[in-house]
Image (tube, rainbow, N blue to C red; front, side, top):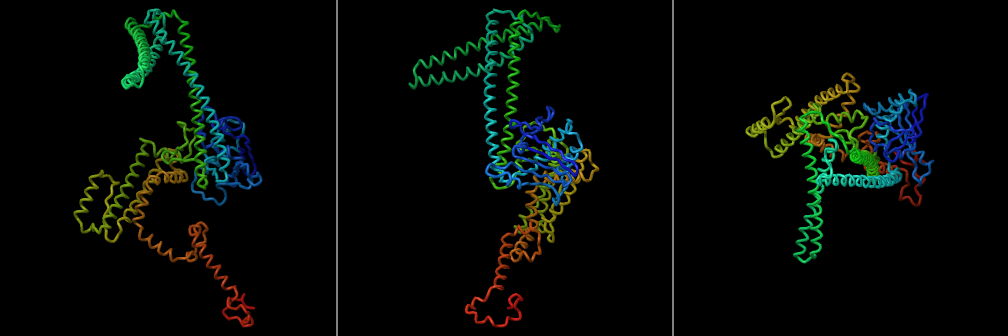
Length: 583
């Protein structure tokens, strides 16, 4: 991918932005560094993007994807897309501000510095790549990228399987060494005094793991012996099969007994030596260093192999993350809609494709979401309590509406009103946030709920956004607080919108019905609306009116259908005829 940063007088170009091996973000052949962890999923877009241009003067980001094989580069070059820019709606977008602020800083810095590279990674990872949208025109290219990613995954699987085989071979050799050592201890072929304390403890721990595995193996073989007995009774097998199963079981049992005796000898020796020393510094005499070195070499080799195994597992996990991002994008594009290729969860700000325990950088929206969804955080607890209160208020309003529909009058049913009032008070604590719906024949109870809800939400938002701004060390920055407010809106309404919408439907059901009835009789021209977006909501009505106007114009301009002989062409036109019809 090619990146261009530009303002009125300066231009920086970065030519090599890539996702190495399908999972490693790189700029000019370098990664972000070992101290930086970047989720690779969002970087799948650099596989598709040919050029990204950021114009700080115009405050616009433009991009072009690679042309599919069946489209010429000249045609694809005209498909430039953009975001932000002149005429776009700015709504206290912290991501937009940071994007152009960082871009301007990069234009001021020396591109050879470490700080320049880190800020460039941050710019792309947090603010540029997440907002780039893909269209159905990109589908062939993305499907091709998915095939390539699957090939990389298959290669990683094969490499991982080979590493598993190598590690299993080393484990098997170490297990044989421990078994042989236990046999020599039981047969008194060696003296434990000749070995260091650390070595004996390592052997004991290894034998404990070996014994667990052998026990499980013995249980499995014993089940096969029991099954062979049943098969022999039912004449499904001969006695030789049962004898083979018994022989296998007896061998495993003998081996298990040997391991148990060897471990017991080592354990008893260690405990006896500990009591004998009585807490004094141990003076172990190591007389068999060659045997210990063999064990130690095997252990070190096994540790290195496990590290390689873990690295390959991590690599596969990152490859899968990119693959899932491609798959999500393809799913959206198959539905013929644009996509950013990422699913962001409002409950914590994470994405479905995130695989790392923590990421180096985060946006303000992600931090706000994480704060309000972190268990045990005071802000999160207040958020959850208020969301629960909103749900209870909306539910109470719906319950009262049901009673109204049953023609139950709260004013005349004193006992019922009292019992509901007492039930509400008994079911929750007597804090200032509790509510009691008061019925009034002149005021819809749902409208009471809506008014109470609007006031409470506004008060709650002011309080929460203040706390979050204080957490971010910007409590007096009005511009920043407004940004926090908007990001918190997303978190809050994602949890409460369903309940709130239900309450609003009840409160304004009559008004909505009146509007629907009026719209059936209303023409678009009667609304005196010229906004193209609003008009797009009524395509059938607009089309019908345009057709009607066309037909009316056609009737006025077409000759009289009954005048086929042309005998009235010399008649004077009617005084009310339009000027264009006068001959």
